[in-house]
Length: 240
Length: 310
Image (cartoon, each protein chain N blue to C red):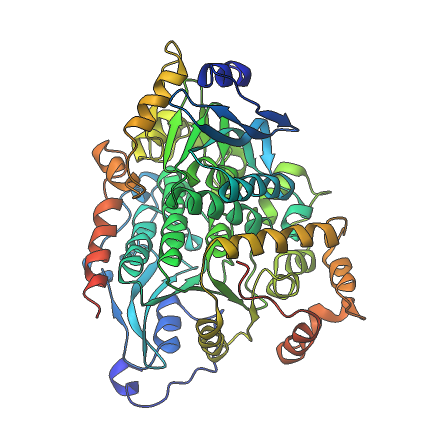
């Protein structure tokens, strides 16, 4: 689905979402009444300091003046890899965007990620993964790191990495593998109007507690994380 | 030197933070004999994923988490071992930190010290590592929302890269030494993707002045600069725990303003030296060679970093 198709299917009652050089902002009418804030990244745009600061501005302005859920619609590259972005503190800009989304989510503005294309690494952490529920659309193709960079860092050849990727879900790119770890909560069906699926999600929205580790255990993609976190949590709570 | 022998004596904190292991940092940073570990190496909770790549495991999966006392006050501590898998976040490694932060959130009253030393996601278990970082970021924000102070101390071999840089950006405050590089993309990753003309990863001076602790302090990306000693980081941790403000919507608005102001003032600067010059440092080219005490005096003169805008 193209971005235009997705927005039309999500908001049959109309929307005013703009795409300015890959940065999405606007809102859409919800069938149940009210509006959803829409922010996001389109056209596989890298998430750099200039993109992140605009997105966090939209979220903060909406916290001050709006209500309703926040949809984070993503087809991004990784973080922008450049001297300028790192020189000016890209880590702070990406963290700030994630903080704004998570803060909003905790304070009555549930954040819902919709991944319809690519996303990777720091760009993924600052947007789609900083939400309460992440929805995948068929064709979404998230990766943690591109194989050439991975090859450089791990000192393994791209051939070996591609071979391992076929047999090792915890390492391999792709929507299905990330869903198994608990990162992607559900996948929507393109044949059904997205508005129906959004309303169903909003009607039965989980609370703001982060249960992605439990989901990863249930799905067999991350067997240890939930138990280890719970054990440390229990031991630490004995502190008085 | 065992913990028993040094329990009463004041420990020697003059040694290098950079050279010390995660366990040594924790032992020397906290009050003598006060540290108690959660899920220590004796429990052998190793990564279930490294053997697929024929890589050796470590019994603590490269992170030490627990509680102790800092100047008599209880704190939670997590320390990454930068010499094991570059301190990278894997499934078990990350889950230990997530559990610690969730406990801090629920208790509301105990501060957390994060001794970050990491290259980011452990790529051999990339999906689990990426998601662990997302969970940690959320847990930091939840803890801070509940009133917990989360202070990052950065000065290790692996620096603080990738998702580690994003976690650092979520902390209440940071102390960094010259060696404590903070960035998202590492020098080699930028060079691989964009070419040596964009970033020459073998130009060490360029790496330090773009990502190193002095630049982060001058830019406002870290609140305090510390000498590369355990004592330096202990003093910085106490200072920050005593001075960071509460977290809320006003914090986020102040951070938005702080970062917008930075873009406006320095967005066209091609190099760190241009930024330092624009900050009003007369001889900016001399900054990389300045000893810690002189640098701290200079930094305090040109930039009083706000403690309520992160």
